[in-house]
Length: 432
Ligand code: 4AD
Ligand code: MG
Image (cartoon, rainbow, N blue to C red):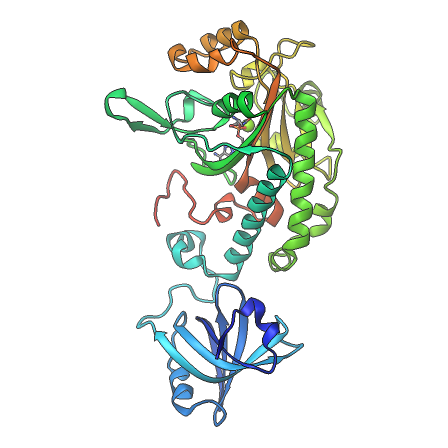
């Protein structure tokens, strides 16, 4: 007998197959059992009719608990009323393990803490399945985007000696005789070295921020895709991001229709995402916020509420450009047109999702960079290698980092970032 996957069940209409999976619901009406089965690739209903199903199997089905693991034999039937278009007429089951206890996650609504505490089981739900499938598609589209454009993948270290982004949010790890290592906040500094060797590079890996933020946008461990390109200026950086985000959104729309549908995502809003994206200068943003009655001082970083106000004026992602130097990291290039500011942009997603990308042109002038490192009181000796990049063939270069979970939150329309990663890490959660 053929072992079939639910996702390929349409190839077996009229044939008897074996499915291996789990029972996620069972309804019995007199002489019929309706078994809801999932096998990881999809979901299907099996119908076991007394007299047609093997009698011992029929009795066994009646005693099954939720999430029992099974091998189910049956004939595939086309059924336009079934959610996936097919049903299985069950001829027999072989139970692999029937739980002794009731499955803790029931059909009723559970609180978020209850579910997070059982994330190892919650992964099996259709909602989590849909979100994590979109995440998978997003990650593979992003990789394909860069691989198709001649970028070289450079895996940057997670144990680092230099502060990549800001001193305030570092995870420290004792490191043999060398003192303290930090978990990477970004791979950027290493990508800058690599772009001088390969031209166009990217990385995609976990990054860490010991941020005491309990917001719906913050994790302490999240995945970042970063790109860095030699000879590319700030303008080129924005163009590359526009292309990347538009390609990503179109890929997800065309390949994750059922998932977005299951999540109730309004896809009309996503369909509008195509280049060019609107841009707004930081100075303009401050004016605008003040006009709306928000007392905002020039020089500060924008918070989630400000980002939402600004981005909700547009139905595409918004580039917010040229932030004040003091609001941004030390490596950003001074803006020649206004040296109080830097050549940078944050990309703000619409619908209240806020910053999904941070990027900039990098300071390529050795002395200016050194002055910024000193101003920020960063330990100079850790940046010796980084400064050498400005002494041996320094060129204009730019790059950015996209937060995968924030992007997936926006694409799927979910409220909180913790659902966009398989096992979220926040200040209050390390289990499971
Ligand atoms: O803006 P950030 O801090 O930029 C950098 O780290 C640069 N070195 C990237 C680069 O230019 N190569 O972080 C980039 C993105 C943010 O826009 C956001 O999407 C995400 O990473 N991010 C977080 N996501 C979840 N939880 C957090 N605590 C995050 N902090 C940043
Ligand atoms: Mg940022």
